Length: 565
Image (cartoon, rainbow, N blue to C red; front, side, top):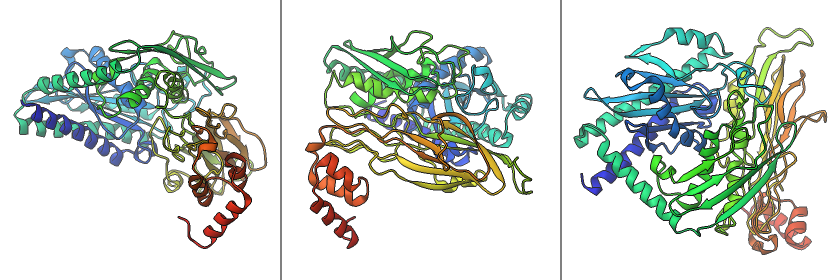
C-alpha cells in the first residue's frame, strides 16, 4: 500500500470508531452516556494494541481502556476466542478504574480469521452496593463485580450472568440496556471495519497497524526530543474526604521518553476516592500529550513514550481491595499537578489550575417517610454530571462550566428531571468565580436541587475544591471554592451521602478556574466585556482590574440600551 492509501485507511479507522461511539450514545439507557458522553470506543490489533480511538469520550476511559484489551486476551485465552464472542468486565484494575464502568470487548473476524478487537466503555448509573459515592471502606461494598468473562459465546448470551446482574442492582432494565448498547456499538464498528477491509482488499490489519504505530511513535518521540532534557517537580493539595491529600510528581524528560513519578503522594484513603494506577496513567499521559503533541492521534504508540510510575499504596496507585468508586476525583487532578511541574520545564505553555474533578452528584429519591406519601411517589436514582470552570490559558480565558480534563458534557436540566422525580430549581453561571488575571479563569455555576411533591432524598456529593480552590499561575488569582448547604443554611459536606428531608433543597456553588498572568495586564476592553456579560461584578471590576466608577456606569448604561452582546 502507498503512504497515501495508508493515511486514508488510518482516517477511515478513526471514522469507524467514532461511528461506534455515536451508536453507543444513541442507544444507551444511562443519562451519563447518552447525555454526557461518559464513554470510550476504540479498535485494536490482534495483540491488543490500540490503533484508533473515537473523538467522543473521555481520556480516563480511552487511555485506561488502551491497556484493557491485553488483559482480556490473557484472561480469556487465545484458544477460547471465537467468532460471535463478546467479553465483559468492570474490574477497576483491569478495566478503567471503578465498578461503575463496564468495558466490553468483541473480537473482529474477517473471512473466518481474527483480525483485531473492538472495545468500548460506559459509565452506568447504578451497579448495586452502596451506590455511587465515596462512603465505602472497600471495593466489596461498592457494587457488583464482574470479572473478565464471556457475555456471549459464539453468539449465545449468558443468561445466568444477566440474572445475576439483574438481581444485584437498583435499575436492572437500565443496566442491562446499557450492556446491550455496548455490545451493539462494538458490532457496528465490526461491520464498518469489514466494509473497509473489503473496499481496500485487506485480509488482515498488520500493514496498516504497522504504519499507524510507527508513524505515531516517531512523531511523539520527535516532540519529546525537542524539549529541554531536564527534571522538574510539582505538588498540589486538595480536600480529600476527612483530611486533605497531597499529590506530588517529578517529571523527567529523557530523550525518547518522559517519566512521570508520583513518589511522595499521600497514601491510600479509608474512603472511596482512591485511584488505581491505570487511571492515574491515563490522565498523566493525557496531560503531557495535550501539552506537546495534541494533534497526533491517540493510539498505543503515541502513548507509549509517556511512562508513569507511583509507589503502591499511594492514593494514585491503590491496590485491591481499596475503595475506588470516586477514583475520578483524584484522577482529574492529575493533569493539574503534572502541569505544575511541566510549567517549570516549558514556561508559558500549560493552563492555570481549574475546577479539576467533575461536580457530580447523585440523588436517591424515595417516598417521604415523615408523613403518608402520595400514591405516585416512587424510588429513583438520578445521576447528574456537572462542571466548574477551567483554568485560564496563556493566551485565552478559561472556559465557563466546562469539564477539563474529563471532557464530558454537562447534563441538560430536562434530561435530569426526566430521569426521576427531581427538580433543578436553579442552574446558572456563577459571577466572580473565575480567578482574575491577564487571562480570566472560567466561571463555575450555581445549582439548586430538590424533589417533587411527596419525596425525600439522599444526596451523594462528589465535589472537591471546598478548602483548596484552583491556584492561579504566573500572577493570576485563585478561582472561587465550592460551597454546599441546604436552603435553611445547614452546612453540608463536599463528599458523602447526606439525607435531605421532605421539602428541603440543596444549594451548590461549583468552583471557578484560576487566572493566568497579572490582572493589571488584562486589556480594558476585555474587562468591560466581562462586566457587560455579567461574568464579573462592579466590585470585582474595581478591586481586581482597577475600573473606575464612571467606566462601570458607562457599561451599565450600554447594557440597558441593548448595545452590548
